[in-house]
Structure formats: structure tokens, C-alpha cells
Image (cartoon, rainbow, N blue to C red; front, side, top):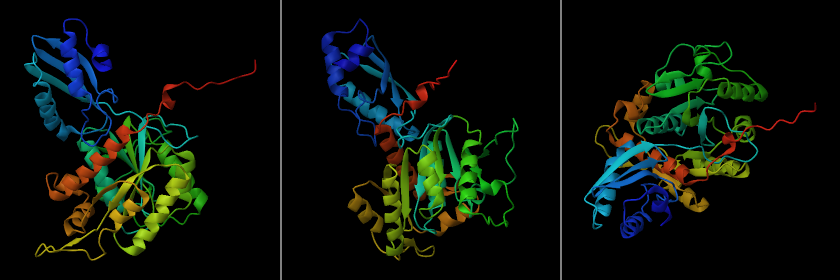
Length: 374
């Protein structure tokens, strides 16, 4: 009865404490495997006049899941004799989670999620933006960093123009669109300017874009990686605290070969892979609605099964998704109640719920210890 003894004061019988505790002990929030007690999700618990009141802390953004969860909890608890009414206050409290070893946490950023593919042209940037928008819609503070120095797409995807400002002359203010904080080399150069740079300059630029942007208290930063397993990815592993990675692929054999390389790369640098998204899984005809697997079937799902990592979901090859992205209004903004937005939302729940189950990162809570000779 550890949960209730810790939260309850006097004025409630031991039997009622036991009954409530037994009801809550195995209850988990959607998309999580950790129970409420282990996740420390219940606070401010009180009992007055046969009414049980408490605060339910959500360790991941899930505003649209709160009503259904409250109903389930209320129905469960109201079966207990002596409880007539349940009052639940919801709040989202996202914590920093463990990253790869020997990399220092960044201020103002709790969790970094890298989105990679290994291969270009699989829709990774469109997926990254819609996932970021889904997380923000559900109550998180989210930023997006465009790490593709050679081919930045973030300005187009978010419909952003102009250059970032600086309030202190040292750091750049992130650009703002649809509730997201955003940064890209594309904001600093002309659209038709090619980046003819060698690897060291590219990696230095990525590090500057990340660390010299004045991110404002982010719960998640989504980093949209360029294709491949080269300099940018190596810099990510060695210098940037990454909480987890998501791999985007198409079901085509050629894409799956590169997706395997991306998985192996993240595995070698101790960045956990949160799952695989299969993009362009089927083609939907804009005239008749016929759905056809033109790039093959279930390639991403089979890859996830092979490496024993979650299969996060499949997105179709649909003209509407492409058109909305090109217009600077991705599916989560253009049609938030549409079928495609619902798919992105579901994937975001799977990713953030999985992170909520993972180990906390306490490194930022401890002060730096400096030893000086006097």
C-alpha cells in the first residue's frame, strides 16, 4: 500500500486505502507499460465526503486521451464501496530521459529525438514535421532542427520566410510556426544557394545551429537528419545528447537495405531506436481511392520484427500529404481531424509513451564540480 500511505493523510479507513490501492496498482496510462504507482503519476490525493480527488500526471503529451482515461479510472474506482464521486485533475509533466553515455545534457532541451532514414527520398522530413506537430498539439513544447545542411526543407514545410533575430548578439531566436520552434540553415541562406562545404564545416554548422539557438524550454527537439551514416550522424552520436532515434523507410528493398544500416549505426553509438515508420506503404489513387502496394508490402514491419524494435505505423503515399507539405501546412495543420493526421498522432503517442517508460536522466539536476588549485 505504498502509494496511498505516501499520499493520504488521516480521515480514511485502512480498508478503503487498501481497496483503492488494489484498484490502481496495475492501471497504466495508454501507450505505457509502467503502472501509475511506479511512474509516480498520482499526486495530491485526498478523500472528503465520499469523494476521491487527485492529480494525474501524464509523463508524455496526450491531451486527447485524458477524457477516456478519466472515464476508465472513474468507472474502476466507483466500484469501491464508500466512493461516490471521483475528481481528477490532469497535468502534463514531461521529464528528461536517459541519453547515450558521456554526452552532456543541453539546457532548455529535455529530450532529443533523431529521425533518420539511411536513404533519401523516403519522406523523412515530412514525417518529422508532422510528428513534431502531433506532439505539440497534445501539450508538449516542441522544436525542430533541420540537420540536412545540403538540402534544408524546413522553411518550405513550415511556410517560413525571413531570417532569425538575435536578442543578445550571441544566439539566434528560433523561428516560430504552428506552435513549433524551428531552426534550419535554410533560414540563413538564399533558397537557390548551394552549400559546397566539406564535412568538418557541415558538422560545425550543425553544432552551432543546435547550441547557438535560444530554444525556449523544450520537452522535445526533433532533429531531421540528412540521409546516410556520415559526418552529421557521427557528430550527433559524439556531441549531442540523443534520447532516441526513429527510422523512416519505404517498403522497397533498396530503402530497407539503407534502413538496416541506419539501425546498425544507432546501435553502435548506443542511441536506442524507438521504432520504424514505414512511409509510402501504399499508393492511394486520388481519382478512385484504390490502394496499391507499389513499393512492396510490409517491409518496414518485417524489419522491425527482425531487430525486435517497435513498428510505429505505416503512412500511405498520398497526394494530399505532399501537397499540404509543399504549401507549408502539413497534414497535422491542414486537416487535423483527417485520417493522415490521426495516423501521425498515433505514432507520436507510441514514441512519447515509450520514452515515458524509459529511464530518467538526472545529469542536469547535479551541479558541475570544478576543482581549482589555490
